Image (cartoon, rainbow, N blue to C red; front, side, top):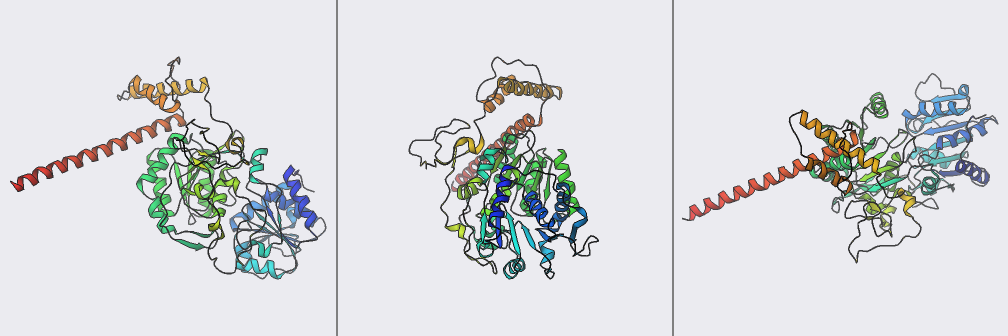
Amino acid sequence: MLNINPKEKQVTALNMLRANWKQHRTMLLSASVGFGKTAIAAFITDGMVSRGMRVMFLAPYTVLLDQTATRFVEYGLPSEEISYVWRNHPLYDPEKLIQIASADTLIRRQFPDNIDLLIVDEAHLRRKKLLEIIRDTDIHVVGLSGTPFAPWLGKYYEKLIKPTTMKELISLGDLSAYEFYAPDRPDISNVKTSNLAVYGRDYNEDQLAEIMGDATLVGNIIKNWLEHGEDRATVCFCVNVKHANYVTMEFNRAGVNAEVMTADTPHDERQCIINRFEQGATKIIVNVGVLVAGFDSDVRCIIYARPTKSEIRWVQCLGRGLRTAQGKDKCLIFDHSGSVHLLGFPDEIEYESLPDTSDGMKQQGASWTEKKAEKKPLECASCHYMKPAGVYVCPKCGFKPLMGENVDVDESRTLSRLSGKEKIYSREEKQSWWSQIKFYQRQREQTGKPISDGWCAHTFKKKFGVWPRNLHDTPQEITPEVSNYIRSKQIAWAKKQEKMGTTVQQRGLAHENSISGHGALA
């Protein structure tokens, strides 16, 4: 007997599975991040085991085996009935009722003939041997996926079970609200596409890395986070290892503790990085496609710097920031890739049936997602906030675009469903910022590098749009959020001075050449 109670939408999912059990041998449960797919698997497994039937739970990666087994035991499944199908694992016993295996292990073995139900986690991941098992056996199969968009799923799963949507879960509070910003939109019009086993057809990574590794774009990532990231725990998605290392190095140079994680990072080291992240010692994990499945940490900001045309990649990556947590009001999403202009918001990507344009047995041809019409969230020209389709005046900064801007109407979407109300700063918050700025001024005086009252006032006005009138000057110890904001302004000023110096130097050189030229003519 399990010791957990299903949530409202989990009850809906279980009822839908029961209602379709006799009519369909294979079903795919569409459940976004935070829905509790492992809990659903536990409820299904409990019902089977109580009748003496065997269940195999298939995790996408071996590193998730222990995590899955631990969750099962916490939920109340009998630990003595759990077997690991992995190499020569000491707890492997083919006669036990609950078999937990990784997809990579299973495809190298003969599929056991005593399984009554196969549960496939992250069912959108393509593995040819697994698809053959689903196709050629007569056992029940339940796939679990938050992104059931792969073009071959409809060939292997007869019924889509869709108890809710990401948008509804956000409105219920089961997922975090988010605010979307698009500070950059790089030109990737000439980047070629190539076939990827997991994500289908997507942009060529080598060409992307050349574009996204541009010093200006990387500088924008650091400057934007310092200015607007509110010192939140952040995950950054990059193109490749070189790009991730560059971004990590620049964050560290700016005084932000960031660590890089790639496919080559050993499992033990990954856990150490995650532990430091959860404890707050590491502020940003910069990664290349490894924090997609099985990563449950409290993430409050996403930096997306990897252009994509894959809806699966897009939703999976952004979903890392949509889990709820105590004290979490929202997730900030900074898209430096331009992908939101093509794919739209993550909670807009919904399908009512499983695609079946491929059999999944060979590399996919032209992506079916390429034929989709471009989505229409609009970027605020002033603050880069991504406005929902049909919203004219920016809800963040109040900017009104020029007349004649093309505004498409989407009556199905409301502002509150996206990211809540416009941020209105209280007098207390403004006073806190002003007191911290004055604290910074005192620090500078003590180090022999004083700054003026005018600098303090202009810094405050840059943040809030008003002067610090009727606020007292009592210093307050500076927080990382205010410190990062000031640092971003310093970096921007330094780069501006550097650019101006280069321009002056170029002008001087041109002047010398001009004089030299006149001398030669003379």
